[in-house]
Length: 88
Image (cartoon, rainbow, N blue to C red; front, top):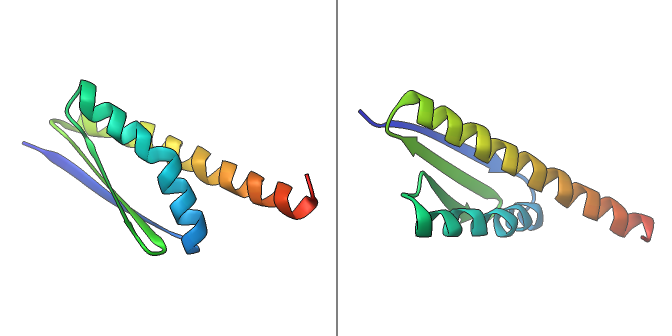
């Protein structure tokens, strides 16, 4: 049995693209060493993240890793924007 989860993240197009660009290397790097468990699709102001695993435990591990990665990427984009407006 295969387990799957899909997540969609929406924000302004610049933010979504910055998040996508910052995490796509992780996905590309993973395909060279192990089967890819994550697919990323950028469509305008939406980033779709599809995850799958052979069992619920693997899917949970993949989801935990990638959701944390997305959260950190989004937070860093926000920090950079705040620094730009503050003149740093």
